[in-house]
Image 1 (cartoon, rainbow, N blue to C red):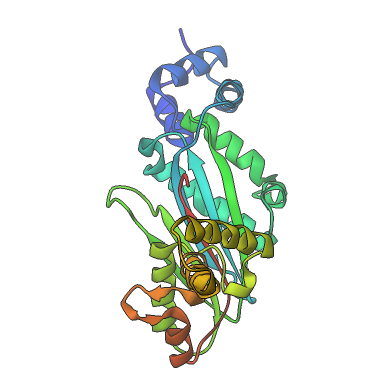
Image 2: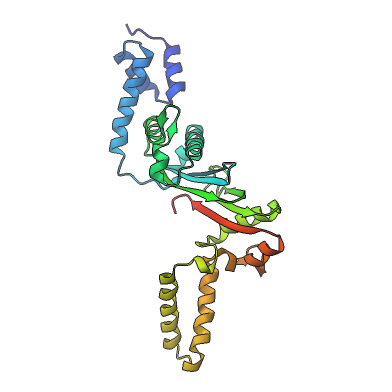
Length: 276
C-alpha cells in the first residue's frame, strides 16, 4: 500500500502545478517522501525541456519596471501557447524574472540569465518552471533603458491575455502625462530610432538609392530629383524615427513638437511586442 495520502497529493500538486497521474506516480516511486517526489518530478520535467528545445515560442508577455536609479528594465518572456501565457504561474514567473533581471541591471539576455534569483540563476528558475508548465519558456529579449524619469506603458491586445506590447520611455521633465502619451504613441507607431541622427548611415544611403531609382523610373525631371529624393527620405524618417513621426493623438503635430511644448527631453526608449 502506498505510503502517502490524498492530502500529500494535493500538497504536491499545489506546490508544483503537476498533473494528478504524474504526481501520484512520483509519490509511489518515492515511497511517500515528498521531497524525493519533487526531485523525481523536476527530473522528468527537465527531460521534457530538452525535448521541447526546438519548439517555437510565439506567445508570452512583456513586463517592465522603473529601477529607481536612472534605469528601467523591459523584458519579453515567451512560451508556446496563450493558455500558459495567461496562467497565474507564468505571470508569477515573469514577475520573478523581471525582479532578478532588474536587480542585476542586466543589459543582455546572457547577463540576465546568469543573474541571481532566489539562490539560483534566472536560467535555472525558468528551466524549473518550464518543466512544471510543460512548455518551452525562454527569456527572449531584455532592454535596460536610461533616463531621469520613466513612462511605462503595457498594452493588452486581448482582455484575456497579459500585456503583449510594452514600452519604457526614458525622459527628463515634469510632464508625466505627456510622457505617458508618448509611450502610448510608441506602442502604436513602432519607431526604431529616437531621431533621424540615430538612423545608421548605411540604412539612409540604402533608402536614398531606392527612392532615387523609383523617382527615375517614374520619369521625374532630372532637375527636380534632388528635392523629390529628399522629400521621400523625409517620409522614411517619419516611419523609423520617433521625433520625426506625426503624433498619434494629433497628426498635425510632430512628436518632436509635442515633446518640446511639454518641456520634455527624451533620452531613450524601448518597445517589445510578443512574438515580433
